[in-house]
Image 1 (tube, rainbow, N blue to C red):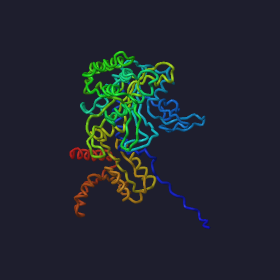
Image 2: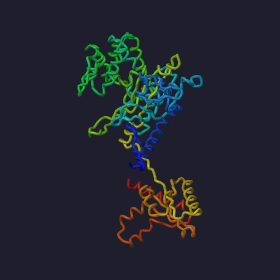
Image 3: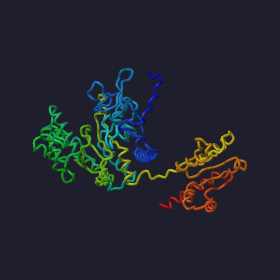
Image 4: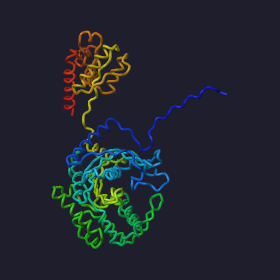
Amino acid sequence: MNDKQKKPQKLKAKLPRGFVDRSAADIRAVNEMTAKIREVYEHYGFDPVETPLFEYTDALGKFLPDADRPNEGVFSLQDDDEQWMSLRYDLTAPLARHVAENFNEIQLPYRTYRAGYVFRNEKPGPGRFRQFMQFDADTVGAPGVQADAEMCMMMADTLEALGIKRGDYVIRVNNRKVLDGVLEAIGLGGDDKVGQRLNVLRAIDKLDKFGPEGVALLLGPGRKDESGDFTKGAGLDQSQIDQVLFFVGIKDYAESASKLAELVAGTSKGAEGVDELNFIGALVRSAGYQSDRVKIDPSVVRGLEYYTGPVYEAELLFDVTNEKGEKVVFGSVGGGGRYDGLVSRFMGQPVPATGFSIGVSRLMTALKNLGKLGQAEVIEPVLVTVMDGDVDAMGRYQRMTQELRAAGIRAEMFQGNWKKFGNQLKYADRRGCPVAIIQGGDERAQGVVQIKDLIEGKRLSGEIEDNASWREARVAQETVAEGDLVAKVKEILAAQAEDRNRAG
């Protein structure tokens, strides 16, 4: 028997499915983008708030699964008091809980924004992650649709602040009440038709995916997909299907408004919804937002199961190339609407609310496609090399580094194995450092430092053919007094910047 202890197996380094690491470039791009969004929100008088990543599972409302262990759709765990907690699924349900819990201290209307990660315990796929960032703005305690109109205008201003020009986006607006009126008009009103109405909502939510023909099947007998799987339909007759498709197929609201008003006339909510749409249209036009920016569009069907009034969606209209090499319209980068029932769940009294959410990763992809993001120049740090390891020398190197930082220059002192100087220059090259500071014992005795322009040096090295040429090209490395270090580094960095600008 072999008594030798088995060698422990190394852990395999890998991410869980549906999660990604973020690079420095992506983090900087997100920071650049969210700073511009935040500036618009602040100009509108919104204030930031932050809620935790975890909420009690029952606070998640419509996302609470009917299961013994609430872990379907959300990531959940049981606390030591046996209560279930879940990672937040969105930023809206936590806001509703926050408002209800602090209702007596909050000044209504409560205008707030927040950005953060949300988590979905769903099957990941291409472009579909289980952790992603949202950026939300909400107004709680404002019952009038003027608050919804303001949200639409703020969405338009946000996209323009990010560099998306007019004609490349539109904010499309619909109203859940109008659809409720349509459903009531075709005989789907009343508590006994709740299930059928829900099936209709789910069917029209597939409009972008299946088109009118596919949705007609889902509204009627049902639809069989390419694999042979059958989805049972809502069971509407042809007349009912035609009227639902008329509603979601309206492209020019001005042309169809009278017919739509006629269809929902006499219903409990339909006429009210049409009036609200007309009111929003009038408000945004009065403020200078024409239909090329904010457009009344009954084909918007996002989240109709969730919202109680106006719904709106920010859509980008320019083409991008997908993974198959096909030109496609980029599409939605965010949306929202009125959700008057969410805060009320905690309160036992009506609390109106409206808001929208931006999908940060998706919008970032769009801005990169337009060349509007990630263009900011990031200069790698100046490297202060280490020639000697005694306390006095190390102290000098550290002082130089701090002097550069105090002057607003990104700088670092080499922290690896300093005894192999060649490795320090390799590090600087791989890092893309623009300048290296060198001071050995001789330079220290003379009170000078050598400053190596690594960018110019790299350029010259491609032109040098012999040692004589190299000696003539020593302009890439200069010796200056310690007191002139910061000024000379600034001069070199400015010259490098000018070269980059000249190169375009």
